[in-house]
Amino acid sequence: MKVLVTVKRAVDYSVKVRVKADNTQVDLNNVKMSINPFCEIAVEEALRLREAGVASEIVVVSIGPKQAQDQIRTALAMGADRGIWIDTGDTELNALGIARLLSRVVETEQPGLILLGKQAIDSDNNQTGQMLAALCDLPQATFASKVVVTGAQVVVTREIDGGLQTLELDLPAVITTDLRLNEPRYVKLPEIMKAKKKPLATTSPEQLGISLENTLSLLRVDPPTERSPGIRVENVEQLIEHLKHQAKVL
Image (tube, rainbow, N blue to C red; front, side, top):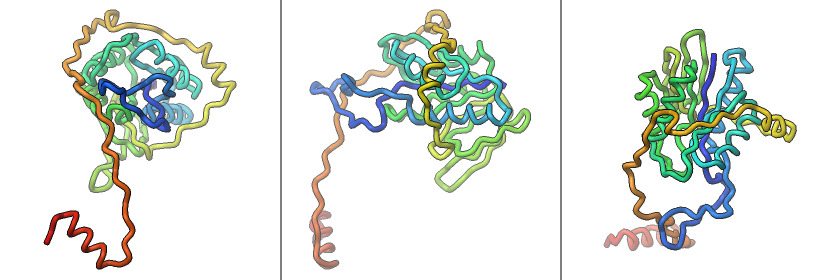
């Protein structure tokens, strides 16, 4: 079974993000970029499926500028077999545009399973996986914390507000991965060197027959409001009085 995995280039989770002085965007100058953590978990899950004898080939796809190839190479160093880069340059993409591009890749590659991170840590939209499943008319399971492939079905345990929900889907299917699904492996230097020789195909929206039109406009970006420092109280009575004052309760 072929597994298709998406990876997104995002600001590294350990970086303290800064907003540009004109509030137009996040400042990305000299900022460390990495695979979106949820996407990295999706790659790891595909690798584990191959190690279990379920998957035969792992294809990684990323969309964005030339630098997105770095994240594809990282996934290849983890163990993926080949990569696909959709060159969109500096074009701003929304979730629907990304899903439309991915749907054409799915149409061409015909994977038995599509794995995506449940969301990207930059926009936190949590939309692309669901839109891709709808465009491809495939069953979907989101927020997966456990994935078990049995024959022509996949059993997914997903986290919901009330606890855990178990779904059985017919393959092919779309699954978005959650943090508790696995812990991605450490990439060693020899694997990074080997990844440079693995095939990486390049395509574009025009070649895929997709005309991108961003229907969303980013008006302004503001940093979170700084929290005021806390205070220390001597006893419960002082705490109650302070809470009353804050809530303007007489």
